[in-house]
Image (cartoon, rainbow over all chains, first blue to last red; front, top):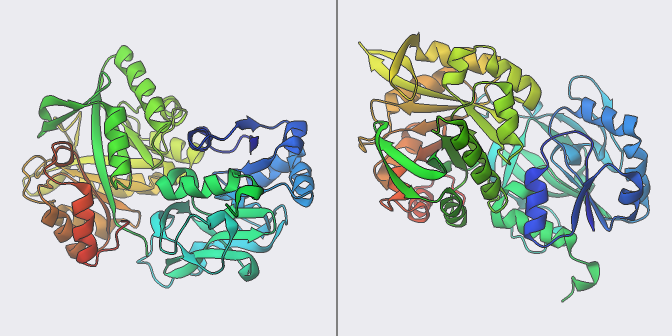
Length: 209
Length: 252
């Protein structure tokens, strides 16, 4: 069973639909016991980092996520959900994240070379792979995925799996053991995105087949 | 490098896709769900569903169709038409829309864009403007292009972007349906005025019109069209192959 963490941030319709479309047994939940028994967990998110981090803390879901991640449950953060995996964010102040992946989140505006690049970084951009990772076993270098974001993860070279070029190289995907993150929206990235989600939900023992 | 988006627009009335020439003389094309799936499978980068239904029965039919589409199509969906309140945003976002396009609703209620942007984020709010030259001045038209509001278009767009509109769709009434190419002077004026993504609409008749658009105005992010795609005059697959050959960043 794949659990999508429901903590009142963003629209989960497409994510749920895309997982259902690839045959996943999916629940959208804030139930801690259910999350603790889930085979896989997806942390979605749209909006501001500070609000989202606060909602996770107030609901106690931050502790659950840290526990399941430590126990080896595959955890995938998407968009703001990916940013929340990091130690801190500088979006409107300074906010603490889950700290599951070393690094921080900063404004894209800080690294753009000119005003020719619009913010948010919105649209389809090809992935540039930096290292191999099982989550992307069905994806090729140069495949396009759909981004919508104004902040990006940085100081995370070791865990960076892929980047996207937008004036600067922006972190597009990260992984550290059983914890994965996509800055882009796989649920909005057509067949490429569905294949990333497929790789995430497939049982590990099938990987070599 | 971010790719230029190709966006088919589906005008939906009473659950069916229609498209008019110069906003009049509508005729039936196809089922929105199957057309959306077809476009998604054939390279569309995004879809716009435009609800031109007037009745509440039709509105319900539209949201049902939207839900059904969003369950099987996994590319960004933008919804417009009949968006007058934050409750309208909520209604279509719950059915799987990613972005919501406002046009006359923002003219009637100048606070709508700011309220929606605060609730759902700038990236969710698309300003759609119908523009026509009147005595050499770009004027904003309301009610599907039938009513001159008297507002100067560039000032209106700047104000809406300042309020939180995250993208602008520029529909040129002057070139719409004429199929002689996009309205490059109008689009340039908008690109020069705002820093958010600009989507060109109205006038595409052939593949070369898109090539000319992106080569002449590199700041235009996307090209939107309806009937030329629906009637098979331009295939999105062929269009994108030509764009790639012309060295325009394209998702193939």
